[in-house]
Image (cartoon, rainbow, N blue to C red; front, side, top):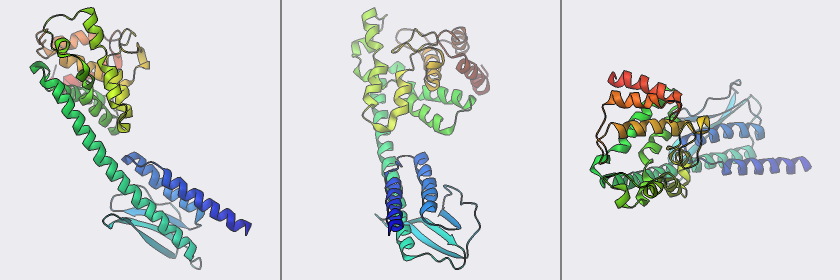
Amino acid sequence: MKNEKKGNREIFLTLSYLAEISTDNSKELERFLQEVVNKTSEIIKADKISLNFSKKFLSDFKTPKGDYSVSIPITVQQNNVLLGYLKVNKARGKHISEKELSLLKIIAQIIGLKFQNNAFQQVIYEGLTETLKVLVNVVEAKDVYTRFHSQQVAHYALGIGKQMGLSQDLLDTLKIASILHDIGKLAIPDNILLKPGKLTPEEFEIIKLHPIVGDEILKPLRFFHQERKIIRHHHERWDGTGYPDGLFGENIPLLSSIMAVADSFDAMTSERVYHKAKPAAEALEEIKSLSGVKYDPRVVNAFEIFLKKEYDI
């Protein structure tokens, strides 16, 4: 009786644990599926437990295949779409009990719900991203000189990131952050943002608020935690004299340092109301001259290689 209670307690804790795992993105979903296999193997003694999908999310356990097996369908309950199977193999003579079968069905239901949640979260994320892009376009549309600036920054930043060997997840984060990096300028008055002449010290202090405002705009949206940090720090300087937090050296997030170079290069090589466009080679030389002062030397080096490959500069 005591062992049965202990077993039921373990089952309850396992199901609760699986139900509480977040699956908002693909990485979390893969982690959840691995945990399903791990935890199921702890409460159901079998020779092999595996998840089989049309797309391979994880590998089967490397255990001998049993002579007795059962496959529980995994479906999205909303429209009864079959996703795959939770499969359990046992050796001959070790049949799966009714209790184990019921437990496997519950686990399969949890998996289906997690897939459904992941799909909903992806739709929400994509919708929010598109809405934020529209807001950035509103900022850029105010000034003919800054139209398509965010797309150009994203292009240069991704070129640097690939040259530095960043993972696809980091490149995806960098792309979104680059597109949204100036969203905080929504809060900057037009008479300052579009001023044709030199800004006064007081006006420049207001401009310097835009990374903080961008961070605050994204703060309530739980999908953009990494992007917020990158946006907040993309005006920091390697020597610590940047803003808003005066970070220096490798304390500055690498993706922010990448964006700083990409942002500066596009600004230098684009016609602006307050300066004429510089030739790309001249802009690169200026960035190189500030390596280790304003910019991360690693990023500057990667950017120079990227420009050479892409544009023969």
